[in-house]
Picture 1 (cartoon, rainbow, N blue to C red):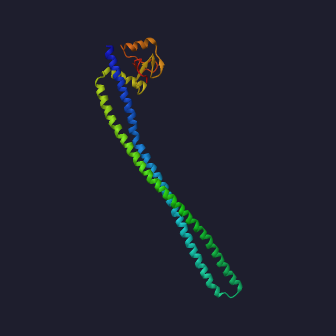
Picture 2: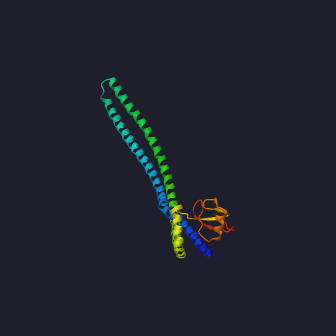
Picture 3: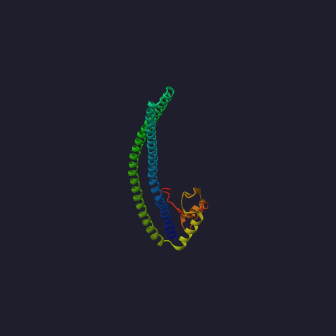
Amino acid sequence: MANILKQQIDKLANLQKIEMECIKIGKLVKDVPEKVAELENSLKIFEQEMDNIQKQADEIKKEYRKNELDVKENLEKVKKSKGRLGEVKNNKEYQSILKEIDEFTKKNEAIEEKMLGCLESADQTEAIMKAKKIEFESAKVQVEMDKKEILADNAISLKRLEELEEEKADLLKGIQADMMDRYERVKNVVGKLPMARAKNSICLGCNMNMPPQRYNELLKCEEIILCPHCHRILHWVNENERSE
C-alpha cells in the first residue's frame, strides 16, 4: 500500500514538473509576437528619424530656392533702378536712386549669406542622412538575425511543448482518479503548485517546520500528507538528494 501510494505521489510530482515547464515554455511562445513586433518597431523608429531628416533637408532646399528668387528679384530691381539713372533731372533724384540700388545690393548680400548658411546646413543634413542610412542598413541586418533566432527558438519551444503534452498524457494514464482529483482540488486552493517537497522536517514549498510526528507519517507514506502551513501535498526527499 505504502509503495503504491509513494508511486502515485511521485507521479503527481512529475505531473507538476511537466505542467510548470509547460507554463514556462508557453509564456516564451506567447511573448514571441511581441518580441518580433519590438524588433520591427525599432526599424520603424529609424525610418521615422530618416523621414524627419529628409523633411529638414526639404525645408532647407525650399528656403534656399526662396532666397534665390529674392536675389533675382532684387537684381531685377537694381537693373531697373540703374536704367532710371539716365532719366533723372536733378541731383536729389539721382542720389535717391543710388540709395535704392545700395539698399537692394545690401539686401542681396544678406540673402546670399543666408544661402551660404543653407548650403552648409544642407551638407550637414546630407552627412547625417548618409550616416543614418548606414546605421539603418546595419540595424536591418541585425533585426533579421534576431528574428530568425527568436523564430528558431520558438520552433524548439513548440516542439518541446508537444513532447511535454505526450509525456503528460502517458503520465496521466498511470494516475488514479482519486489521486488526480485530490491534486486538482489542492491546486484550486493553493494555486499552480499543489505539490511540495519535504526534507529534514521542513516543507520546501513554504520553508516552514513540520511537527516531527507529521514528518514521520510522511516518511511512512501510508496516507497523503499536507503541509500544515501551506496545505500542499507533500512528497519526501531522500536525505542524500539535492533540495530544491
